[in-house]
Amino acid sequence: MDNPVIDYSSKIDAVSTDFSNVLKTFKEKFVDYYSNLDSTSSQNNYDVAKNELTDKISDIYTLKATIMGSINSVNKTMNDLERTIGSDESKLKELTDNYKEKTGDSSKMLISDAKEKYKIQYVANITMFLGITGMIGLFYSLMKNNSQ
Image (cartoon, rainbow, N blue to C red; front, side, top):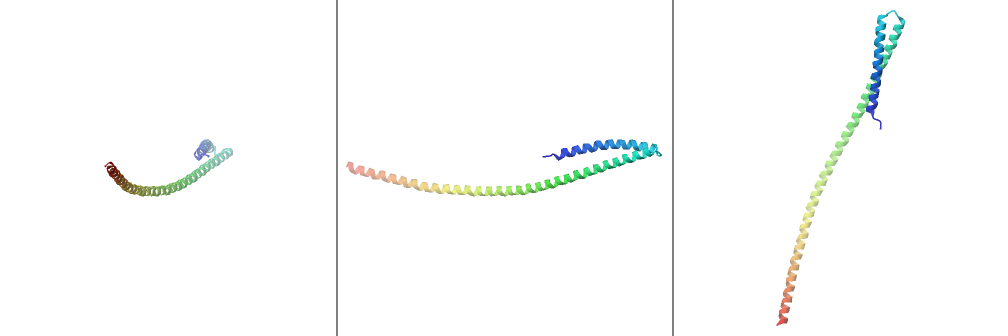
């Protein structure tokens, strides 16, 4: 993927270098023209330098407009991303709340199931204890009757 920052940086450097050279040439031709007002060649050289300077200024404004357009495009993309992230954050919060709510309900259900199983096992243990005690009592009485 092309990096637009590097691309604009090289364009800005190129325009800056060209503008400096054209401005220097324009300054020389300006001084030459106003030193020799009667010279046609000085007039022509001045006009050429002035047109080159105007072209470079036009290039600068064109580059500025292009950069501003890119900045606006990036800002729009950033705003879209911010909106998307905001909606995704609300979805994440909603899912997190649902998870917490369902986790709380399931833990309550597990606790109530465990209590119910504990009660069933408690009754089964008491029944078994009473059954074993009854069997021991029965065997004891049978053994006692047989030994007499």
